[in-house]
Image (cartoon, rainbow, N blue to C red; front, side):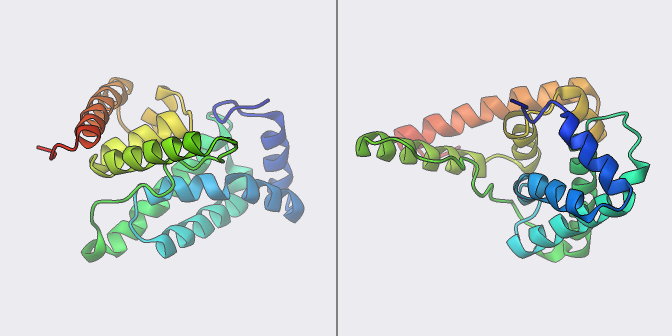
Length: 193
């Protein structure tokens, strides 16, 4: 079973086929990354339509640039790097609409419990986690998404965000601390200071 931080042979094969113009391989690669890129881009943009457009722009850039992939990083890091640049371009084009971003579907998981109480409790935890994530800064939301949801190594995140690895570590530490504080205040019903 491949995890998101391992570059699978399948992805390498798909990208090699895409670089030679194989549309079927591109469709498979697109389906493999579409949701992940959308969720990542949503941490940077507050507009689902703009996020969808960035996904399309990103995957078009992958199609056009597949033969230029240097294989010095993981395919996922390369694709997320393209998505980040496209999203930041969209932010620059829409500066007047930029604001704090919601992390849609932060806890996007299937509910397979048969016990309704377990499902209710899981839903409550998901809502509290979403609310706590919403209170984080954009930098902290982005770093947590890359670490925990995309499972990228710190080194790849440093390359993607163009910051030192130690800065990644520091942001993760402070983001986790802030998330814990927000979760604690939400759980106790106290206002956030």
